[in-house]
Length: 120
Image (tube, rainbow, N blue to C red):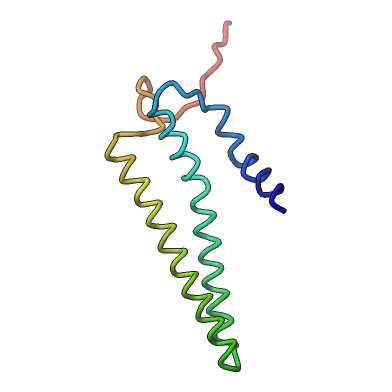
């Protein structure tokens, strides 16, 4: 199972490696930003699902042991959501502080694919 997780992380990061020409430290920050912008919403969604699952278990719990286990699940879900949103906020603070963006300095402010000139 551990080998599968390494393969999954590699597969998730592979599209970023095509645009990962690292010329300076800012390129490393941009790479980390794009990686986190892709992965963090998925992790936050998983934390919300985990929280909702804990609430569902809490409402359906009959005895005290199941209620305590469900409360623990809810608490861990809230902590996970808080940590993920805090990380996302910290990344955005760093991006805004250091003036990082995915827009190239020569563009007019939009991300565009290069166009192929047509002769004729």
